[in-house]
Image (cartoon, one colour):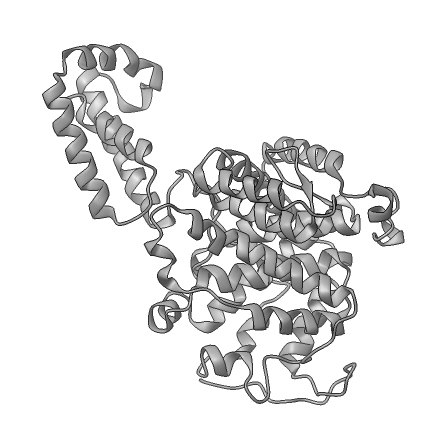
Length: 414
């Protein structure tokens, strides 16, 4: 089975294939390298060379050509380094996410569903089908909110792009360099879609979700690159992805975080890989989904300019504008927790009579133990009630223990 799978990889990649072993080696390399310094205008049909003579707009022609050439195009050193960091960050998110409810649900699904043993599911011994692995790893990657975030597009690229590139990379036996370029391409393509549509304003006004549309196109681009699709095939890939493009803003009402993890990472990685696999197998379709009757932009935002899809493509790498989170909570809460950490540190500086910058976590153990011994059960119950009230006002799925610990630390010196 393994030998059959490897035959699917491009011959020019030779023995340097992405396998379960090389995946672990890649994580080790990433650990080491991470420490190093590091006007509404609708697109109109345009005559172009295409496979079924439908006509291709300049935007689609430029976009599909760029995508098809990504596997052979060298990246700037700083972009390669940033990509390694985000791969490592996403792998870590998958592993930590496996311990929470969304991750456990994803692993149970993958274990029960089975499928041909082609692609690795992280944090497990499961090897399953390419599409199933992409879905499962995508859910794992967003399970604990530690995956990265791209503010301009209002999306989380890594939880979809990296799982899609991993699954397709194993399916087609690509090299490590090819894998890095596929991931970078995913970060470049996906965010440009929701930036072009209008970002946060588009989501608020349309009720469509930028957090699914952007990662889905990113995952498709990464998987298409791993599959070594040519320009015409990339146009079909974009078309199939546009048809699968979906997701409602109602994800923010999911209190268990399971559907949210599917929405952000699982569904998007699965759909992107599906587009790549069916096109690679020979499927055709509408060659330019971004122009002509009933096109993508007419459906989502007729006032958007499709030229945004290729704006500064190859000059501005979106992975360099993507943030790695410090806290395992949604991006809007990052600054709040940064501020809370500063307040806690300052409070302990006053309590211990020492400069805040000299205090480390170990310094707090003895005072906290003393305080804990003096706290009555009534006072503890009152604090927990207050913590729950604060958590309720945040209206986000913040991890209960993190919220409790942070607020307890904030109150403890007083």
